[in-house]
Image (cartoon, rainbow, N blue to C red; front, side, top):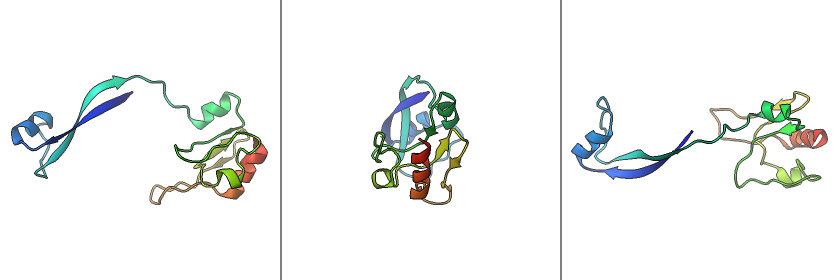
Length: 119
C-alpha cells in the first residue's frame, strides 16, 4: 500500500501539536510534517525467486535512469555495465555486492558476462 503525502511547513506551536503525536518532542523551530492525501492499493513487487518460478532465466533489480537493452545485447558489459545491482539465475546463482554500510554498487562486468551466457 502506498500513501501519497502533502508537505506542510508548520511554524505555529498549536498547529504543530495538532499534527504530532502527544509523546513527540519538538527539536526545531520549523518542523516539516507529512499528512496523507490518499492511499493507493497496488500489487506487491515481485521478488527475484517469484520471477524465476514464473519461468524466467534471470531476475535482477535495477533503477530508473540506468541502462537496459533488449536481447541479444542484454547483460553485455559495454551496454549495461553499472546497471544491475543483484541477480538470481534459474540455476540458483545469486550475485549481490550490496553492503548496507557502503554506497550502492553494481555487480561486476564478469558477473554480467555470466548472466549474458545464462540468459
